[in-house]
Length: 327
Image (tube, rainbow, N blue to C red; front, top):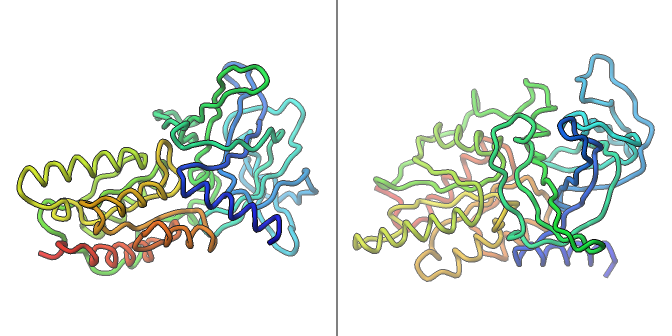
C-alpha cells in the first residue's frame, strides 16, 4: 500500500473515533492587538500545500483576490487569506493552501505553515460570536505547546463562510428560484434536527427546510444534537410514545466541535431507542474516502454541500425511512 493511501486510511480511522488532523498556519499580526495567532483548517479540506507560485492577476477582481493559478491544467482562483480575516503578514505571503470544498477548488495564500496537530473533537469548543471577522471562525482548538508546556488556542476557520464571502453574489448557493420539488409531510409535532457549525450552512439549511415546509431545529455541534435527541427521547418515553414521532430525521455536518458527525451518527445507530432514526450526512468534505466511512457508521445517505435540489431530494428520501413519519 502506498504511503499516500496509508495516510488517507489513518485519517479516515481518526474521523471514526471523533478525532481529526488540523493544519495550523499563521497569517501575520491582527489589527486589534498586533499579535500573530494560530489558525487551522481540517487536513481533509487541504488538497495541496506549496511554496508561493507565480499568480496571474485578474483585472477588476475583488480586493481579496490575488488572481488565478494554472495548476496542472486546472485554473483555480487564489485569495489573500490574511486580508480576508484582517491580518497583516510580517514576512509576506509565502505559502499557498489549495483547498477542496463542496466540489470546488480554490487556493488561499498564507504567511507560514506551522504543523499538523492530531486532535480530539472534544478539544474544540464552539466560537460564539456575531462579529463580522470572528464569524469566520467556527471554533477554537485547545492545545498544549510541547516546547513550553503552555496552553494555546488555534482558531478554526469557517471555510464555508470564507468561500461564500469571496464568491461573486450571483454564483453563491441559494435556495431562491431552485426547483426543490414537493413539500414534505411529517407527523404532527415532529421535527428535522439539523447540526452544523457554519453559520452560512445553517442559513442555507434553514432556507431549504422552510421551502419544504418541514419543522426543524438547528444546533451547532454533534454534542448538542446528541443531547437534544436524548432529551426528546426521554420526553417521548414519559408520554408513552416514541422518539420517531418527535424527530423525523437527523441532518448532520461531519466537521463539528465537541462531537463530529461520524461519531454522532455512530452513537445514534448504536442506541437501542434511536437506531431506526434516519441520518443524512450533509458535508463539504468530498471524496470516496468520506463517503465510505459514512456508510460504515450507518448513515442513511450522503449529500454534498450545497446543492439545494439534491439536499431536498435526500431529505425526502431520509424521512421516508422513519418508521412513524407518515401521517
